[in-house]
Length: 212
Image 1 (cartoon, rainbow, N blue to C red):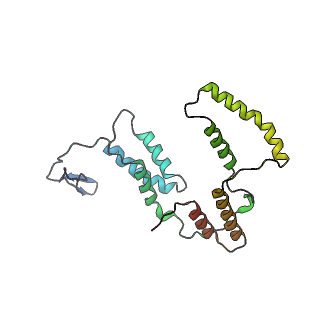
Image 2 (tube, helix red, strand yellow; image 1 turned 45 degrees about the horizontal axis):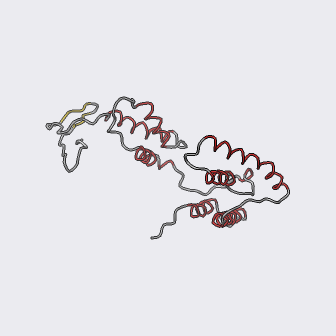
Image 3 (tube, rainbow, N blue to C red; image 1 turned 45 degrees about the vertical axis):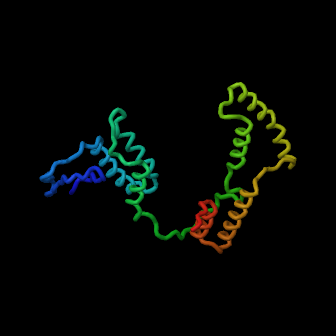
């Protein structure tokens, strides 16, 4: 095994030969300083791959974060540790064979109401509207007055909703998006789409538009 230090400025020719459980150094010495935390980093990479296989439903990012928190001392450098995203990608790649190849399955939709897919639209809209009325550096007393004004409107809004005098405000973009989702879901319920086709159709709606 040759040293992994290869760059424009460094070309280390040190090698290690393995005989069973015995590792013998080659004739050439390392021409660079040791990388801090190399042993810890190698252990984290190995354990992360093992844990990713043993816990297929746990996020690879969460596994890496826990390992770093438990194994890397706060007061010691560990420059040998790769980027967290790279570690998570490698862990997912290592357990790729555990992923199901066939996505044909039935969705248990008894608990799914035939209503709006995203139930937090109204809450997000309220937060956005409240943020637009304030500012990032709003003083505390102005924020209290703003929240008081919002609270005073709640009884009136409840009555207007009950009387069908107040309805939701939805942008044309999201109204069209929701219409397509209901269309795909209806096609799934009638058997015109499989579960895989349903998920693929929805992914095209929410995924980025890439023009080739």
